[in-house]
Image (spheres, rainbow, N blue to C red):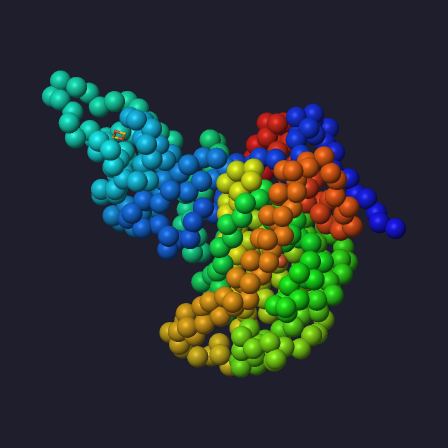
Length: 363
Ligand code: FES
Ligand SMILES: [Fe+2]
């Protein structure tokens, strides 16, 4: 008989009445809004939870984040140009410094003062290959989660971008529910997941599964398993997945680590970056080689798991978009859920919003 697990309830009516499928984000965290390589001296427009932001790199290489709105006529500043360390609007050429203050108007008459209009600027950090942004109006007192493997010479990275027409809760639940290996059978990612236990606190849910992995990276040539399915052999490995609000991290045995860095756009759209790391830790001989050679290997193998990762994303996105559409058409229909990790995840999402309601804004 199927067990029915209801959506978590809340003591706070405003949150209780909000379905997790419409819930907002806690802005008092660092979100990932772009890859480092996407931000150049040509401004880039991004959206984090309904806030349009113009990212740009100044002449010294530093990244800035301004509200993507010219206060003169409300057009998008991200369609303008970078001039020195300022952002110039495309329409009439007003310029703004990195604090969002208007510092130049090209046609200002001698008897006119600069307008005192100011737009919002956001704390932003470039770290481990990504642009981390703090969308709150309070100053951050925490650091971005970071990806220590990004620069580490023992890890080969692959990046895949997720752009899905679905609420972020569907993506997080997909990532936390390892029983959906069924969906990826043709890609041979993992098999026979079984949830062992969960530990959780205010900011994270760790779900510990056992599973069968298709990959074993114990010889240097075994990296070719990423390309050639015939070389893969199922063997048991621990599979740990963690929702570390607002991001997700997973390890499969000692050989693989995957991050999903989130940028929720609105109630029905989510952008995220999936970063897969293959570990070279098992090759102790490799570690004795010169650093330049190890970096050459790391760089040469960048993207080794691209086909696998992109394939997983396509399959997952299709499912979560179907879930979103089904919800929009019939929001009153309840799911039948057997995985208690998903109950914990929904509770965490709601608790993060309750923290805001309670005014307890910083972790
Ligand atoms: S609209 Fe931006 S300068 Fe006029
Ligand atoms: Fe998946």
